Length: 115
Image 1 (tube, helix red, strand yellow):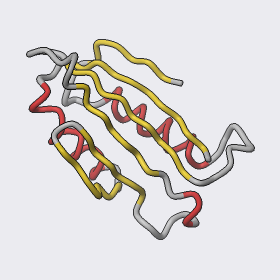
Image 2 (image 1 turned 30 degrees about the vertical axis):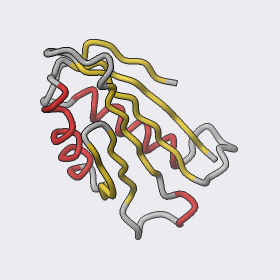
Image 3 (image 1 turned 120 degrees about the vertical axis):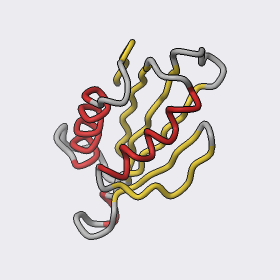
């Protein structure tokens, strides 16, 4: 199973972050399947890649460390594909979404962590 993670601290109140993330995921042609105030699950729309390569993205919004001006979010990208090559489908989706989040006009990034 391929799995990639990244974390961000953004200058945005926690109550504004979740709706903006849902909008951003949908703009990237991802289907938001489930969400709560501190969790979002989205996945690729069927049709472009085989089922085993479908990437699921989980976004965890950290309420415990949120302030009035900053919120931390953790993203996990995963699929059933074995990451036998560095350039696999899950990695490409991860890199693309990472760039979209970093370039977003909705917030200012305070800190970024990726692995």
